[in-house]
Image (cartoon, rainbow, N blue to C red; front, side):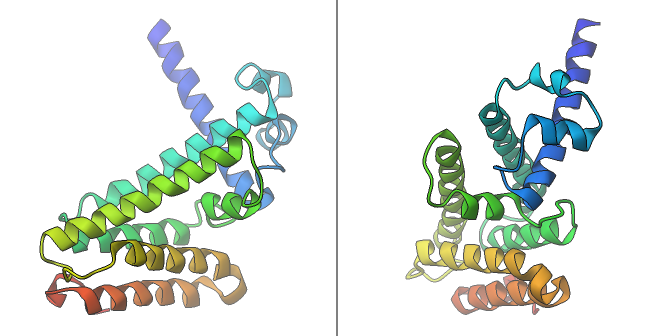
Length: 209
């Protein structure tokens, strides 16, 4: 029975943080507070205060939940693809699919908070910066694996390639309301696909379009 209560409590906490992540994509981390979150959930602020004692605690917990979502919705599906260039391509596709699903009303948690905290300091900024560094290292690692497997040319600059893939993803999510998803997501897909095909030693490993 104790284990059941713990499990229910964890599910409730996750559901609350899912709401927090969604709110941040619209209002930013500065706009997130226990009162704001309680109002969105229709619960008492005191009930949330038992989980997070301060706004900063809530912000940090929300960043962690956003990381978990990213692992579930982007990294997880990509890992089902074969190691190498196909996994690198699958990562980009999964990211765009996550955006296109409209799971988050503002498009992307991390794009929102990286712009918001770009010129700041402190624990929240440090966690966001660390998350970004780890993500870029992961994209570079997948590109490096593709080079080691002979699927990308040996002279491929993996850091530059990771940067270009990231730039396409960020541009898409920042422009999807300005230009429409039907325009920007296909462009972001094609931009990376054409770049990978140009570096790939066996273009048949990638889709035609």
